[in-house]
Amino acid sequence: MGEVAPRPPVTLLVIAYRMRATIAESIASALTQTYPCEIIVSDDSSGDGTFEAAQACVRDDPRAQHVVVRSTARNMGLCAHLVELAQLAHGEILVCLSGDDIAYPERVEKLVAEFVAHPDAHVVGSAVDDIDADGKPLAARVRGLPRTLDQRWLLHRGKLTTVLGASMALRRELLTNLPPLTGTVEDNMLTLRAVLLGECRCLPEALLGYRRHGGNLNDQVFDRSGADYATFERRHRKIIAMYRDIAADQRRCVAARPELPDARQRLGLELARMYGLEADMREAILDRPRRQWLAPLWQGFKHPGLRRKSAERALKLLLPRRWFGKGGARPNP
Image (cartoon, rainbow, N blue to C red; front, top):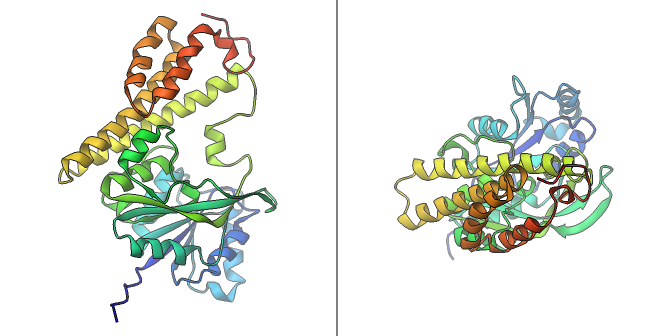
């Protein structure tokens, strides 16, 4: 008989910010996991009663005797919150669960099995079932990606879409052995860190209910609440800042690991450049005279992952800016 692979220690992080109405359901789903794990429930100084609701939930549940419920000293934002939690966790693998999502009972077990079967995996995510604010189904088994993602796939895919952060489990070293995670949105940075050091994997089955509502971080960044130029511009400003944060994070990570093979370092820097180019193209369309769009668009045309987007943006040279948000009153420069 072959040796049985060791079961790595796991910390399940229930991460909350202003989730008083849903935190009990999220904690209850954490307590149903079939894989034994440390559970830390952490509220990012919500100030709306989320922390107190979590304490009451744990206090009233006999299964939760060893669950840690804590709050940050001040509101930190998701990325800094994750870094702080990585220092507190004892698990080799961190499984993330938002305080408004619902983990299915075998979620941790199946994610860990993928890490054990593929030791080079540094992030494992999954498809999810979209649910509404009341927990009712919206769409089944969505937001998945191919089973294996590496640097080359991300470069040539070009959509800048990565594993959904809400579905992620990650090796703790992505947060403890690399520069601090800074910025607003964690998904892309953690995926790029994973493929820099190894690979990223995504299970095709849905392992959690992903609650859709106005407070979703991605929905706040990719805001489409209005069909006007003001919303268009606000959305693009946020996306530009996010992409520059991602590019800077990847460059810092490459610089911090000079022992990595040259090919991995080169591809990591090329991924950083791709995000930087995408930010430059979006900024040119917002702020610059049309003749100054040509240089960033041409750089995009030369990048295999950005050719389609560059072609689409070139067509906008013929359109008034006020049309970009399907309305609005921005004058045509």
